Length: 487
Image 1 (cartoon, rainbow, N blue to C red):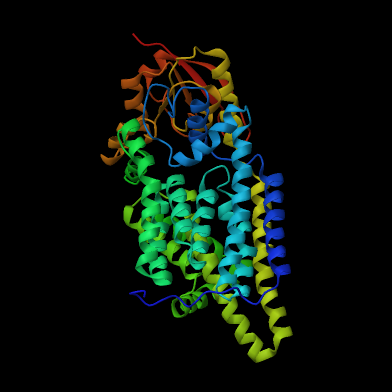
Image 2 (cartoon, rainbow, N blue to C red):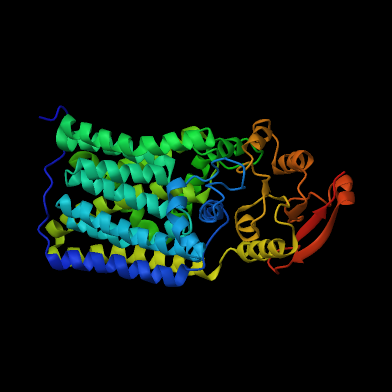
């Protein structure tokens, strides 16, 4: 018998197979539409992982700079999964975006099944509608965010279905795709105990550890450490003067949503759902608890406010709002009858959906202008520089991927020893100057209007001459490439 209080016995809710097909159809159609609209979306950070995949496919090893065994990707499993696509000559950014869109659809379907297994089809349906269109998640396309979240959500479904072996496999996959998914695994462990007792927990733990241990052992032997070096670098970046903390960014995210009337139903439903989740303790409480735990952990770690860190917080908001919708539906049914209650709830959820679609339209209409500039710069470097020429830049993802050149990263992700500059209170300019002085890159890629380096240092200007420039009217100065000569 379970030692702790059991979760309420889960069972298939009284919904038809038609509803299951509609949920699956919605998930697939939304995923495909997102692929079409956001196939060219991206940002710099995921290209670091793409380069790991490309180098592995090319026989250079699972490294960023060939010959330098540093784990600078936060998504090792994701990079390994992309390697066959790289070997086949496919466009990795497009493949990753498609995988991310399909993962959003898979996450929506997982939410539906969590509601179905909890006998809360309204909650599952609302979550399945809102989750894949969340602008904060779509904005992360290209990265591993929606992929590891989908694995974690299906791990929660496996808990609700009392499948501890599948839970262990899915949670291990999520943790290998992104290390902080270990928090989802911890929540999952508690869920397994409550749902199936300690014997189920033993099976879950055994599968999770047996899956994780070989990967961690290989990483330790290959890189000298089992965890990505980027965690320390990004914690150090929080010491940069003017840096924004995770907690501050989360507050800004909530404030931004609260300032848009179409999203107000979320903030009415979520508190109601939080109370309902704590009272009912059903499967939908698991993603809610994970999102809250993740937000608390990242706030305590003191990392900087990178937008792709907020995926689990969005999961918590969606889960809470969905539970709140189920409670509200019961109230409205009792007060106004089933038909009027359904219309009122549909209006609230519809308002949020309209807000999401408008936000997605704005994202699609304003792609990151840096991508095209960095791509041009990378291709110029690939054509006009020697294969072993070192290139220094503040953002190395896109430039490094398209150039194929060894990169010197002023942010400390590829050369984590630079993180000590930030811990000492230095900024990116200080780190860049130290990296240039010690590693002496043959080329610099610099947006001088944003981070003056060559123009601010006469000694550097004497050694580094501009050889290429890439302009965009949205920026006050072109992105320039400088060739540097050193004694």
